[in-house]
Amino acid sequence: MTGHGYRKLMRLEMPLRYVVEHVPPPQPVFPFIQDKTGKDDRQMYSTHNMGAVAAFIFDPADEERAGEVAEAQGWDLRYGGYVEKAPNKEVVLEEFDIRFESKELNIR
Image (tube, rainbow, N blue to C red; front, side, top):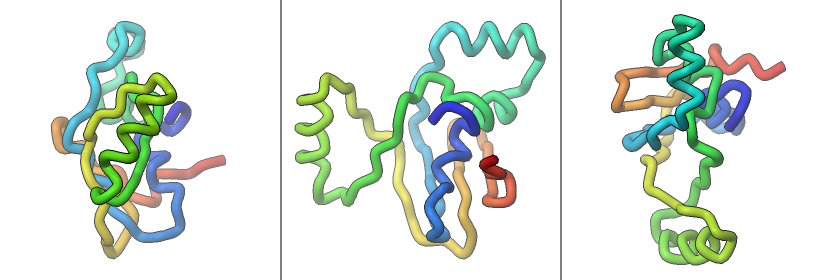
């Protein structure tokens, strides 16, 4: 999720809303960057992964299997939120009341 931060969740063509209910705590480098650059939370989460390495999206019925696969790879899989159909693509970071819309993705 580096480069475009949480906005990168919107890469799929389908109009989906990604609701992130639980954001992992940022690694120490990110508050340092924020302090030195003066960027607000919205700017930081739109550009940096802020400690989230990857997002795995799967059917809730497959949660146990997803956990097994993650554990076999040495990953700590944590529940982050859910995905739902929507009229337009967007990412919502509930903890910070931040919303990114599809027009903000701009992958180069």
